[in-house]
Length: 495
RNA sequence: GCCGCGUUCGUCUAGGGGCCUAGGACGCCGCCCUUUCACGGCGGUAGCACGGGUUCGAAUCCCGUACGCGGUACCA
Image 1 (spheres, rainbow, N blue to C red):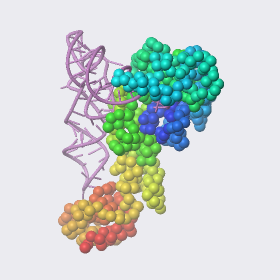
Image 2 (tube, rainbow, N blue to C red):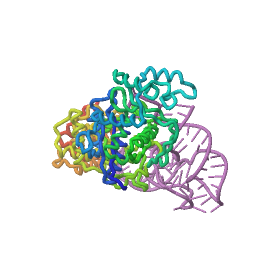
Image 3 (cartoon, helix red, strand yellow):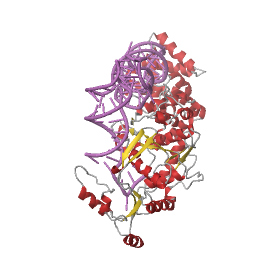
Image 4 (cartoon, rainbow, N blue to C red):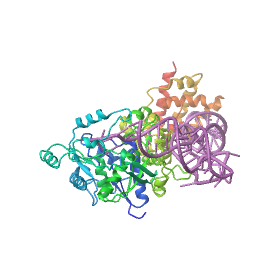
């Protein structure tokens, strides 16, 4: 890489950070770190109508949670700030004026109604969406059609206006996309994009070009939805006399239902679209990152599990695939389970505590919780399932699984459990091994199968027919609790 | 409609002319382990969109068709 790598993640604060946005950020981050470059965060808040107050902090929180803190951004500015576009208005106006002076842009005074009327008039089956372009602009109200005096007067009068890109009438714009290689557009297909809106703020197209240049961005890595407007950006770089950064348009993340992953076609399939939901649900950041990295990229060998460090070492845009990737929640679940199981019991205690707090349960020490984690972590997909899967570690079962009761509490279960309870009461060392000995001692003596006793005891202790090792569970619960639960069940099921 | 981009198992993908009887992962199915359920181990299922070329030889190169996706805003 000849020049210093500087990339940016440039979300618009119009809502909570989207999972696809996090992947875009991740690819930018990996690319930057792979090349020892910088990863910047720039807030593209030029649309005042869609501005959402909490969005910016949501974005920052998500990036930090996922382990990709920006090297520069609104909170830790470098030398090219400000990092919010709303704070850079004068800069954009300056370049817009330059473009006008050069003849590469022009003032347009058409109202929304004027444009609508033009579209209505020109609309046809072949052209359902007439554009404001090199052919239609000749019949509109702009500084290309109006006299110089009139233009000056209108501006002096404070008439609302926009500044539009003066797209050449013919030619092609070609560029090399790192992921797609050669891409070519006929300028005839481009419209005279609005560069400065009537509210004085730039559109994305102008702002992004000006900022990327001024901020020294070497590579623009963004979603494929931008590919169609890339030629306009290339034109802007050319008109402004700047070298365009390298471009890489990432394939989109798709819904299993088809189309872009959006609230509508994802959440009803059980796929959250906002990163904050993944955080809330208890996904491990490493798992989400690993999963997201592999949605459209892979190292070229058969590895599936890679940490952020490994991803950084291996990542390259050339290996990013060209086609969209369907979001497969089952695979994410598998990644999460994998990471969960690889983590130490101790490190998961805080997650358990968080869930307990949510459930209003308290009063258990860390050693106890660590054992609970140990017993549970191989049977859950998410830490948020800890409480549901292991409620019996914290309180006596309030209800009993009907099927399990029917299967377990029959025949001479009452006698067997009563005998077991008596043995437990006499036990001086309430250890898993001893409990196991006692239980199997009874079944052997009575000549019945192990399950005849184990199952009713399990139901009595946990309320269900399956779960972690029963003896370790009983050891953790302690003698008093075990005896009490056995009594309760004996009373309940002896009728 | 027009413009652009894409198309290997259900899904994520490896593959860049002979190494491909197309490899891995998730899912699913089966077996083993386990005196529960899981975990784990082993095995199986399933794919080069279609049609033409080019070539001794094509999943790999070219053209076309179909399909999918994106864009077509004073939104990003």
